[in-house]
Image 1 (tube, rainbow, N blue to C red):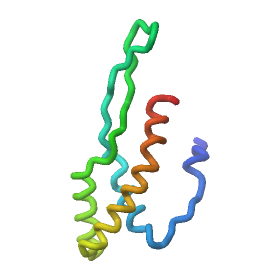
Image 2 (cartoon, rainbow, N blue to C red):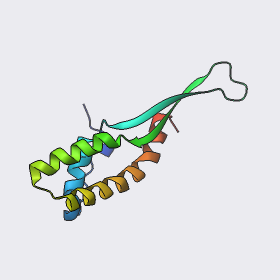
Image 3 (cartoon, rainbow, N blue to C red):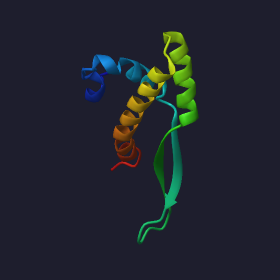
Length: 103
């Protein structure tokens, strides 16, 4: 089966971001999402619309604590990785929203 071009592309990771990228990959299923029912003008049936609210921060905390313990991170390093994850979260939200709702 051919791979999606988005999955087959290589990309660079800044050396200082590796820990955040690895934590991000552990968080791939930790999104808070809700389904709202939208009735458009002239529509007969409501249409489900998925709204991504962001990462589940209690799950982020657990992942960072476990990863941090395994890697010997101090509190400052966990805070640094958390901020990097928030940057990735802000970039991912509009993409997830678009993919979820076919726009």
